[in-house]
Image (cartoon, rainbow, N blue to C red; front, side, top):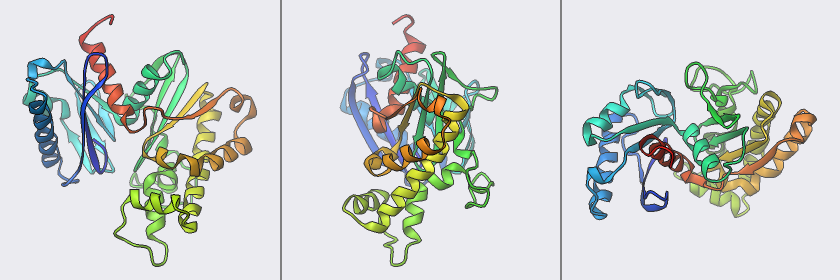
Amino acid sequence: IEVNQIKIVIFDLEIKVITKSIIPIIYKDDYKKTLEQVFFEMDKMREEKNLKSNNLLGIGVAVPGLIDKVKGVLEFAPNLGWKNVHISKIFKDKYGLPIVLNNEAKAAAIGEREYIYPDISNMVFVSINEGIGCGIFFNSELYRGASGNAGEFGHIIIDANGPLCHCGNKGCWEALASENFIVNSYLKLPNSNKELTKKEIYQLGKNGDKKIMEIFKEAGKNIGIGLVNIVNGLSPELLVIGGGIVEIKDYIYEEIIKKLEESALSISYKKVEIKFSELGSLAAVYGLADLIIKKRIKFI
């Protein structure tokens, strides 16, 4: 479940995609109606493939927010406006299957590491969508921290005088470097078309719109500032950038690297590789598939 859309994927036991569907969220601030959308689409997909509930190992759900993994509760998803949603219970009551709930960025980090970089011990996955979240691997283990929500680097402050973030602070990284930053910056331009979608704004930039390309450069620079903090603070061997931002990777990469070369501690920067996600927009669902497999089939 993302901020504006829902991705539903059915995998087989070899983690191959059997079928997938991407649907827009119609009632963003109403979790009950959104989950009804999810159930309707899931049931339709299962019927098309003639799958009963007992044909499934389990269901993984990734959400863009803070979770209580033990209780299976989404505590707060600021970009959705959802609080204290008992996701695992709702899905369990509906389907009677094992449910895995995870934060979107952590699920994406698991997917990318397990299927693309299984030999990497220390890795940070930075998921840049409407907001920014991170998944951190230390010594081949996902680091969750005391609350279970370690990795909320989207709320490190990179400009104390910057714009207000929905978390209540000013100048958070995600307020200055996320896809929302790009869209909002475009909408503030004189004579901007308020009806354009994010995808259409991206396409205008790719087609050479100079003002949008400048916004891309600004976002790249700001992404770089946050990555400097991660490289200096954690010194990972691999840093993977994922999420919707990957769609404009060719327009932000130079600014990101320029900022890292300029400001990161050289001893740490020399040891880190910077990559864009190879699983792209499906990294999180691959991570959920891995978690379900490991939950249900031991020693696979």
